Length: 455
Image (cartoon, one colour):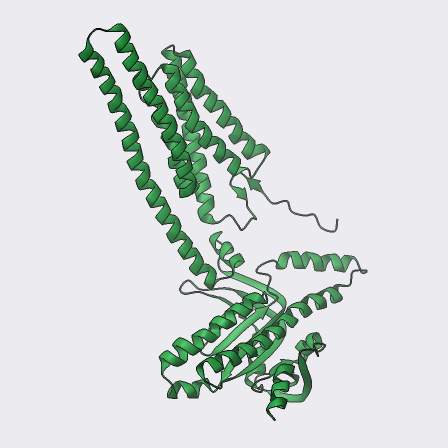
């Protein structure tokens, strides 16, 4: 191997390099493991107590719990790392079953001191550390087993009094006492669980709402990195295609048209349509600035390390054509940027017709290295910086309405898309802040055919 691959460190909490484990999830896992360790300790105390009281069958249950969960915890941490879900399932099953087993071994709720109440930790734990829906299933099992055992206690108590006592009043008192146990245990636990379930359900709903808002602002990979505590985020990315699109005449129209119509209806519909086609082409919307719209392609969201390893491999193996592979990769997202621009022209035409307006779109594109990331602490967004961004912006501002103005670097990668565009050179132009540049214009063939039919 060229370079020793780093094996990601894993534990029961999960892979340290796995961005799917957010800080919140890791805290939940650590808390669950800590509480599980405490229940194992409690099981050992109960087992010793039952041994001291010479309840040997009952003592076997908590000791079995300690042995099972201790083995599972040890295996998940030191042997089969990353098996957190296996550990949780084993814990929920054991904490549900074993207290009921002790209840049976000791002969009922009175004799056991209500040890079956420990089983209630199962649905409660599922509500806090799994999901509200899963906790509902566990609670159904808990209620069914609890009701069965308590009814059995009630039945045996009634049978015992009828068989061995002629005191009817005393028999009735025993049955009523058992009935009180049944009502109080099941009733109280049902109310407590209902409160916990509704709280957990609302918490999940609010969490999903906030997650949806964050995902609409930040790319999913960036959001996961922020949750893991990686901040600020600064990625150096090579070969990123950048598109700027601007509505020609929008500033003038904003003085003549009502803002609710121009912005609240027209611009909102247009940007919504742009968002949909950006997603369709697998590109990344960066931001809107007034009536301008910015999109990029080719971002790897922090995977530059793997790219550097590939480049290192190409350096050691001359037979690998690094330049060709880079060119193919860049051409792919550059072509998608061009097809996106084509769809943007079509969407503007459709929405213009809907609102009886006649705006035109001016588009500029460029490819080059950028710095991408998230900075600041308040109202932060994912953004890109660098000279390539400025160049793409200059391509747009120096472009022609209804066409795509591009740098020579971009043309080298997309100049073969003659089935969609008519290309021609603009020669050498003086671009503000850049000096002399050779640029090209791409006119969508669909608009050329429309112009010809209009004539």
